[in-house]
Image 1 (tube, rainbow, N blue to C red):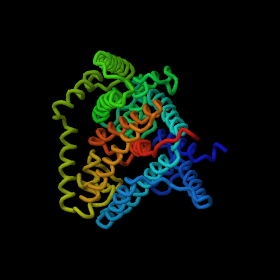
Image 2 (cartoon, helix red, strand yellow):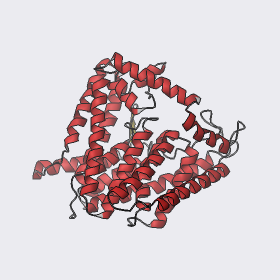
Image 3 (cartoon, rainbow, N blue to C red):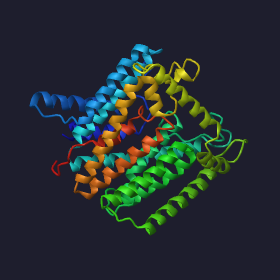
Image 4 (cartoon, one colour):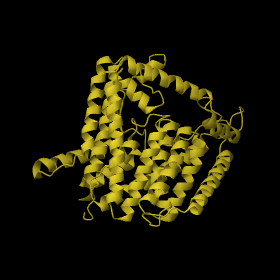
Length: 415
């Protein structure tokens, strides 16, 4: 029965992660998200199969490194100012690790990986259409502007715009990988619609970390598709891709500026251009605040090298109590301050192991469609790591999804 197939359930759970902060049920400050339901059912099915039929679970080597990191997370509660936050964030992390583990164990054939990929691409359409709708509605004349911005940044189903920016980075790796390849996995028109919606929303999102993530993805996907012989490096074609991308970017800027009603403080286009240039000069106010928070995080890691200050407690170093959490806007600084030197080291080793496993999977697979998906996942993974240097990526599911795809064992062509 397809509804009780753990591979289908896992793919459906990944699909539902795109719906961000929609809550099914709330227990205190803990929200039960829609994707967690198929996740739990899938886990129960897999472990019942394991116990009854003694099916072997695939545990990659780097999963043990991840276990060491999880130990440092648990130890960090000793020194936590707000242990409840540490407990809550640890539970959230465990949910992502379960998702990561399920992807590895259920997407173990080419057919199942293609199913997961299609679920990811379809989810993009719903998220981007809703993001466009909210961008228009929330920027109508007379609607208050939130957070001191000239306009209300689009956030779709997510808690805040930077989370939506990370989702756009996550999805872009897969879409760009297929778009520049010669093989068709989903409908080309559908793919182009998603691509154009992403670009418009990316401009209006004004997340500089997401912009950097996009640039890294473009470079990574082009490089690895050439390296693994999916396409030959042709500088003429690369130039055309860059020109096309910039043209669409400017078009996205134009459409966003037409849609968005800004406050009396200034012009959307001028503001966005200023944000682009601020990437080069790194002198604006928000950058300096993040730099200061990163310095505090590093100092905190040195002061508490073995226990950190408690997973999820990094917001306390920025001044104030931050009872509901916070970040230094850099996932490495967060992890170092919260779990100490050993926590940061184990997580870095885990990230490197994922990267190596991903390259190995790309090299070993013979099927061009799965190769395209793996390269898209690698581009997404690298882009999210870069984006994570300006906004914590380890406390969102998307890095874990791409890591899970890259970590699958050698795929069988049989179902």
